Image 1: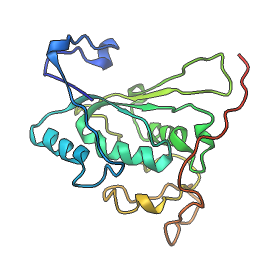
Image 2: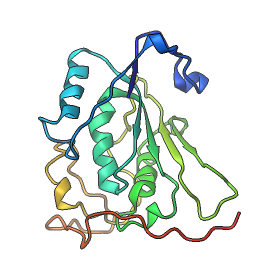
Image 3: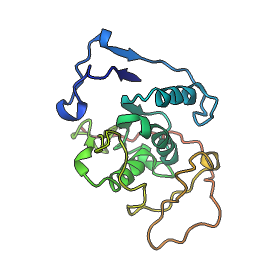
Image 4: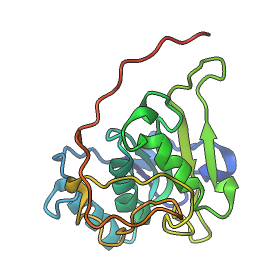
Length: 207
C-alpha cells in the first residue's frame, strides 16, 4: 500500500500515472491474518491509524479473495480511506464461473451503482484472447475525493447471491441482499454447499 505525501504525486485520474520519487513516498507492509475484519488484526489497527491521522491512501488494489462477497467485503472496508480502488480479474471467465459470480459479478454490480460512468474504467488484458482473462477495474474518486459508489448496491439486475455464513455480521452498513426485482427475499441467509472458492480448470483458448 502506497500512501504518498500530500502534493507529491499527480492525480492518477488526470494523468494516468504517478510521478513519485522514492524519497517522497511512504510504503507500509502489513502481515495480517486472514480475518481482516477482526478489530484486533494488524490491518484493522493500521486503518484506524490512517483514519485518526486524517490521511488517505492514494491507490488500493483488491486481489486475493475472488468470491463476490469476499471482494465486496474488502471494498466496503477500504473505500472510506482510498482515493482510487482497483480490482483484479474483473473480466476473467474462469473466475466468473464461481457459484456467486465472483469478481466479474461484483464489478458489473458496482458499475450499475456509479452515476458518472467515466469514474469506472475497465481494462482488458488482451482483446485477442477468448474467453476473456484477468482484467482490471478502476473506480476513480467522486467529488469528495474517495472511491465511493453513488448508491450502495441498490441498483442493478442480478440473480440472487447467497451470503456465506462467514460474511454475516461483518458489514453492519451492508445488509441488503442482491436480488432481481421479482425475486422474494430469503427468510434466512443461505450458505452455499461449497463456500471455499477454488479456481476451475482453465479452458483452452484460441489466440
